[in-house]
Amino acid sequence: MPKKMLNIRDILAHNLKENRKKCGFTQEKLAEKAGISAHYLAMVEVSKKFPTPEMLDRIAQALKIETYKLFDVSTTPEGALLHLEQSILNNIEQLINITIKQAIANEFKNCKEN
Image (tube, rainbow, N blue to C red):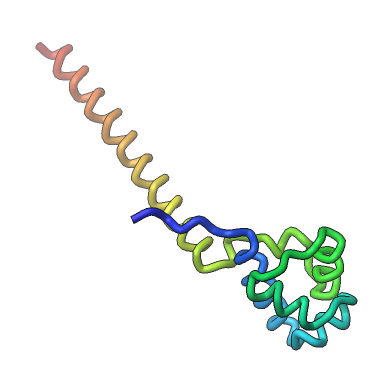
């Protein structure tokens, strides 16, 4: 089964909503602080609209976060799973490399003994 690719609009929507809730803001309150319409903000939160860079900066400022945090993949459930998967794959790769090196060393040792 192919992996679902993370869509930048979905990442933004997830992080925007999570950060808004952490701040205790309604969509209306955040929209007011960022100088955008509540309807537009709602559309961003459901991945229907994508803000301009300037608008992203205003939203991040209203949330008191750095703009790049609106795109942090590790905060999404999919991102956390991808991070976990990558960690597991790295661990497996390290174990395989160690096992191969040990097998080669043992084979070399056996050749020297014979």
